[in-house]
Amino acid sequence: MAAAFRYSPTTAPDPARIARARLGIFVLFLSMGVMLATLLSRLPTIRDDLGVDKGRLATLLIFGAGGAFFALLVTGWAAARFGTRALLVWSTFGYTATFLVIGYASFAGLPALFAAGQFFAAFSFSFTNVSMNAEAASVERYMNRKVMPQFHAAFSVGMAVGLAIGSLFSHFDVEVIWHFSVICLILMVVRLAVIPMSTIDGRPTEPEGAGLGGPFATAKAEFRDHRVVMIGFIVFAASMTENAAAQWVAISGVDDFGKRESIGDAMYWLFVVSMVAVRFLGTGLLERFGRVAMLRASAVSTSLGVVVFAFTPTFWLVPLALVLWGVGAALGVPIGFSAAADEPKRAAARVAAVSSFATIAGVAIPPIIGYLADATSTRHALLVVILGSLVTLTLARTVRRDEVLFQRLRRHLTRRREVEIDAEMAASISPTDTGTTLV
Image 1: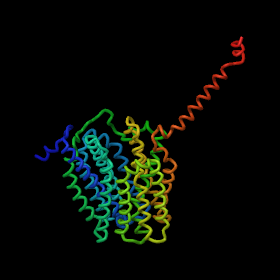
Image 2: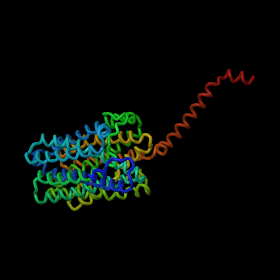
Image 3: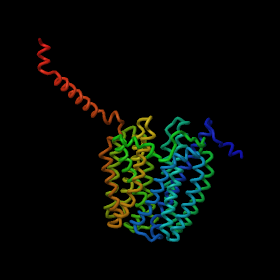
Image 4: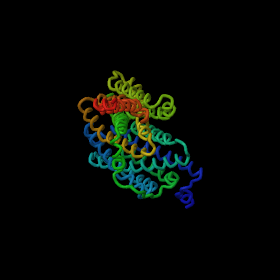
């Protein structure tokens, strides 16, 4: 009772309450990273247990992207209607239950049940994602410091931890159902313990305009802005780069390089650690070199990494390839969201608009790579990622602020318009008018 009162909702938190909320949210991000990595670390085994090829596995993974897509349409409304604290609790139970279903589907070899589990796991994850990011933004406002990158870095750290644990379970040939059961139940207890301290307020708000449709309803007007659309393509490419590695690197380690699943997990772990390192250094790098230079460098690093990964004649070059790939994947999404939020008054709608491109990438890319992998090999199919790097290189200038990006074009259009006006004025003065004037 005392603990419940201690963390009761408030709009005037003291510094100690803010500090505890920051710690609690850090743990939530960390736990979600562990949870997602738990699934990714066992995909090769799950595929074999389900008895599907890479193309069909890609099709099954689409159900997860579909769950995330559907959740986007209702999370804003649900957060306003029920509050973030309630959503965090509900999604914790939902996520735990669906992961147990996925584990059982693998154990029993039931692809349809796996697809259903994927859908509801992603649906629950989206509710947690929206709620913990909303609470993180609240802590950032109370602290008046830019601490949001620290929370997202915690998610990546959780990914690295989850991959390491998954590699250990895989090394000892632990069944997926027992692996998932142990991790999910532990994380459920941890999350339920920290949710009260993580939510400073967390109550329903029901603001005007909080309806169904999510970012697609909120941001549809922003799609008319060419800069927003171009930034969206950059976010699409960055999401492609991350998702492709997350879903296919471990499988490639097993199929293309003949390694155990635990080694495949270690391969993806190296990618994640490289990405985490750059994200921790990202603020300093961006301040020194700027968005455009870092985005171009990221695209080049990604391309080099993917090419080496696809064509290396020896496995010993794979770590170098994954480091280059992870370094290149680190800053694309943060830069894209930051650029979309350049104009404060329209930041929310624009971020919502570009986030929809990330969702589309999650739906479209997995089956493309899976079907190509069936025709060639997984590591050669991953060369699709280079197309995203080319898009990033081409559109990199877009992430400059509007006034910088279009300054030269605006000056050119202004001069052109001035010339046209002068020509119109000259044409409006006929010879007769000139003669009359002279007389």
